[in-house]
Structures are given as structure tokens and as C-alpha cells.
Image (cartoon, rainbow over all chains, first blue to last red; front, side):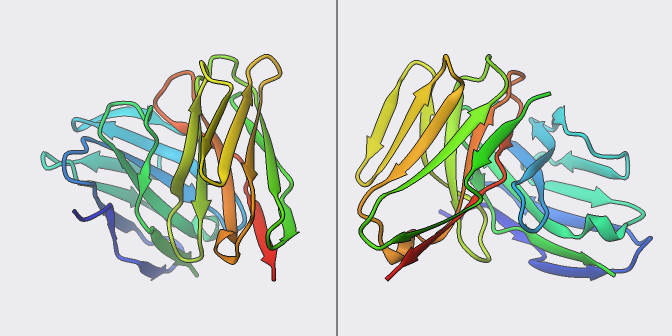
Amino acid sequence: DAGVTQSPTHLIKTRGQQVTLRCSPISGHKSVSWYQQVLGQGPQFIFQYYEKEERGRGNFPDRFSARQFPNYSSELNVNALLLGDSALYLCASTPAETPVYGYTFGSGTRLTVV
Amino acid sequence: GENVEQHPSTLSVQEGDSAVIKCTYSDSASNYFPWYKQELGKGPQLIIDIRSNVGEKKDQRIAVTLNKTAKHFSLHITETQPEDSAVYFCAALSSSASKIIFGSGTRLSIRP
């Protein structure tokens, strides 16, 4: 079975632009969470979606938004990019509504804002 | 707020020796504590976890201990091997149960 897949793997954007990152969870997993990992730090929680509804939101500005589709895949959108948005964006899926069995992470999308 | 603190930030051990990473958490309602290993260019991978009703758990060369009273938990790796070199993250499930909160990571290097 395929694991969590994320696209694209790398992305370079200019300040002020908008970006969309994509995630496909493990088959059968209905919950997707997004994390931001700045170089040298631990992942920081951005969003959790379950059954197409937002179930949790981290301390990120409204420039960050996400959605989940009927097939449980998800998109993360970031508007008005800032240099500080440069990071590895990780998607994680779980079978249950809450990550009580841990996450399975994708390999991430490396976003560079110049 | 909810917080997980991890130390040391870097750790270098001789191959075959043991490595210990320690973490503390702030939310006394946390009841699930996973550990992740992240290799270069990859996402974090769950290596072991422990729940609040258990004090210790082992899986081959890896063991985790949990002290709920002190809000401490630790990862122990015995007989370290070169492939153990990676960044390790401790984490705790938030009381809202919607997210996992990560520590800042420990870069473990195994010296040959």
C-alpha cells in the first residue's frame, strides 16, 4: 500500500505569492493533519481535518487555510507568502479522528520563499 | 500553554553504547506519548509510543519510560548502530486530542 504522498516535493515562490500543497492519505485514513517544520525545529501543528471538517487549528495567521475532499485528500493554501513561511510542510494521516495511534507522515514539501 | 521540552539538542555516542533522550510535558491531561525518528529528506517516522497507564515499554533495542507524576518521559536506545543516527522527536497528545505537540528534537550521531 502507498504511504502518505505529498506534492510537490520542492517549491520556490516569491514573497506575496500564493501556494497550494497537496496530500493524499493512506487508504482508509480519514484524518489529515498539516504541520510546519522550520529548519532545526520540531513540527508545529497547523490544521487537522476529519471527514472534511476542520477539527483543530494551530496558532497560524489567516493566510493559512486548508480543506479536505470527499476522497480524504487535502490541500493546504498559503496566501501572501512571507520569507518566514520557508519551511518543510508535512502532512500526516491517521485512521481515527484523533491521533491516539500516532501519525504516518509524508516526506513533506520543501517550500522556499525568496 | 501546551509545551514539550526535549534535551539534549545534540548527542554523540560511541557505536555500541547507549543513548538517552529526555522530555518533559506541561499538560497533565496528556495520555499518549509517541517518539519519532526523522532521517534526512524524510518525514518523521513513529518508532515507539507509550500510554499513561504504562510506566515502561520495550521494543528490541528501544525502550521508553514515563513518569506521570513528574511529567517526564525518556527514550533509551541500547547497543547503538550507525543507522540510529538521525533526529529524534518526543511528543505528547494534546488534551484536546486533536493534535500532537512535538519537542524541539535531538540530533543523535553514532561514532564508529
